[in-house]
Amino acid sequence: MSTFLIIGGTGKVGRRLTKELRDRGHVARTASRSAGDVIFDWTKPETYAGAVDGIDGMFIVGPGSARDWSADLGSLLTVAYDSGVTHTVLLSARGVEFLPGGAVATAEKAVRNSLIPWTILRPSHFAQNFTEAMFVPVDGIISSPVADGAEPFIDVEDIAQVAAAVLADASWKYDTIALSGPAAHTFDEAAAIIGDNAGLTINFYDEDPDLHTIRLRQNGTPEGYITWRMAMLNGIRRGDDAYLSDGVQRVLGRPAASFADWAAREASTLTTVS
Ligand SMILES: NC(=O)c1ccc[n+]([C@@H]2O[C@H](COP(=O)([O-])OP(=O)(O)OC[C@H]3O[C@@H](n4cnc5c(N)ncnc54)[C@H](OP(=O)(O)O)[C@@H]3O)[C@@H](O)[C@H]2O)c1
Image 1 (cartoon, helix red, strand yellow):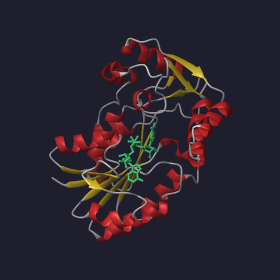
Image 2: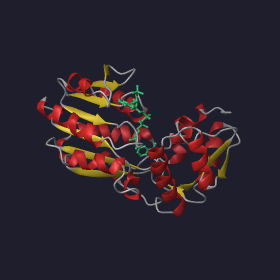
Image 3: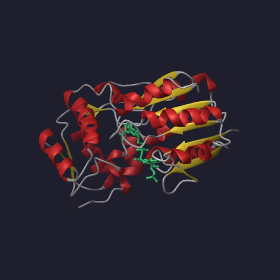
Image 4: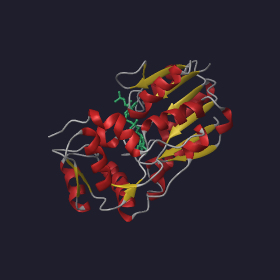
């Protein structure tokens, strides 16, 4: 059994991964600015050494895609290497190809350049974005500028299981693993599936991309994040993100959970947001 550090361990992926590792008998130490087992802040390098002390491997969720954090990541990896960490697993994103040179791409580069053996996970958009993040319906409407573009949404539980398996198995070192659900769905289809399972009427509204950008700006969203988000959403809108990735099958030896399976398990918790 090993000891793992989960940076971003209180988030959507991190908290599920932490549970998964503990269920498998490992020690999992969560790190975040406010609520983890250990206080860790990407903007405070003095928090790095304490977080990595005594750990074997670490899972990294970055501070978001609004800015280039690869220099901070490089510093952490140096501290971790000196501390004896033997494996880094980075949570990247499949859409990295839509913004070459963006924060996610430079983070991947920092991990590949590090002295610590690494694995990179590149998931598609999360199914949980509809219940916990940017696609949560407001007054029964999912608004996004994606038209009839389809996306093979992945269940974050699958990402957590893949990450737990990869962290504990040295044979995945130096591999980049793309992950998606087993089928791509348009947002119209997703809205219908969620609505059926939540017992609510949920509809999709194809927002104008320029108006979406203006709305984000009006809400004070950082420009860097708007650039990343629009690159991802434009990829879906063009139909370029509908392809399937087999990482769940490769690592876990079983198919990824379908969107309908995820909705049956989690969409019933959805309540209307106004
Ligand atoms: N959503 C998607 O569809 C999707 C798809 C592919 C890839 N991804 C990738 O997934 C990642 C996000 O993962 P997630 O959804 O699990 O995250 P999340 O739910 O947004 O949680 C973020 C975590 O990071 C911590 N955090 C934020 N800023 C921090 C800082 N400056 N220093 C230390 N900790 C910090 C947060 O805790 P505190 O606030 O307490 O610090 C929290 O634990 C991103 O890198 C994104 O590119 C997302």
